[in-house]
Length: 165
Image (tube, rainbow, N blue to C red; front, side, top):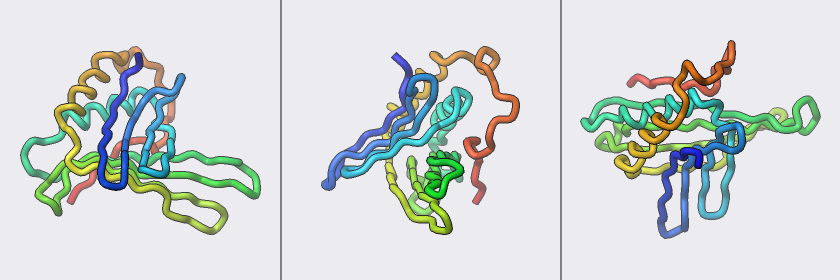
């Protein structure tokens, strides 16, 4: 079975989830809300490895910490109906709320000259021990970076970027 990083929770509105998993030969991020869900490509094993390491490195003490991934997919390319679906996925500690850990997903849609909000899924106080165990499983079960095939010029949109306060 392929390793999966997953955070599920329930509130009065229903079930929510943020999951990164393998779908055939690719990796995807699933964001799910009680009445809506969507997926976007999460690039390659190296990006999954970076996500796992980010979760393992999540500080126990309050300090500035955030890593962010930019994800996107274009549908109906080169047609009048071209639509780009993009999102930001972040892992960090919230400096405005006692440096509580969080996972956050916000998506947008762009068609023609218009951009609109998509789905927002925020997991406050995720189960850090469980996520670290999943991250450790990722790192031990995926081939090392030297063994995985690398693209010559990977797209910048899927690279994590550390935010500085």
